[in-house]
Amino acid sequence: MARARERGRRFAVDEYSNPQNLTLSRASEYAHRGPETICALQSAGRLYALPDPDCTGSWRYPQWQFNAPSSRLACVLQMFSKCNRWVLHSFMLCRREALHGRSPAEVILDEAIDIQQVLDLASIELNGEQGAA
Image (tube, rainbow, N blue to C red; front, side, top):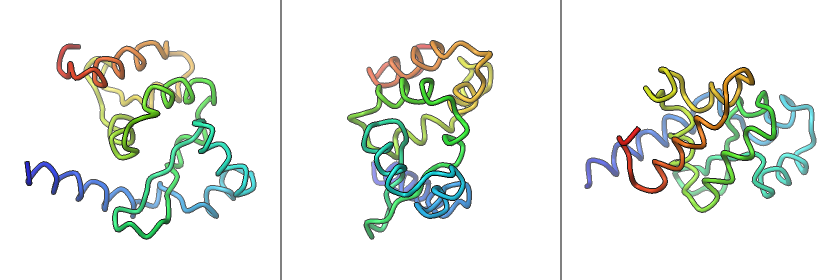
């Protein structure tokens, strides 16, 4: 269990420092929206942010989500509303065979692909049936 926690911590530290995960000011610039709007969208479950693994109180916003159709992103985020943001982020980035080698983030971004595939996969993973797909 300790090794799994350490892997999770390393993932969080590496992802938090990834330049594709933006500070609030950079997210605001990138999205052409004020910081208050970004925070309001996060509070409403229409965006997500990653907490600093060192508990400083700062956050990073994955850049890809600002390019996603908001309704597609929001329906997936809603499913993870009670989950740790790092669990959500890992889900979004991990390529899955069930998605033909794509990550949920890639499917969310591609409106030509049925979002139901991601919703089904999220349901399976959130219900503890990992590997059933």
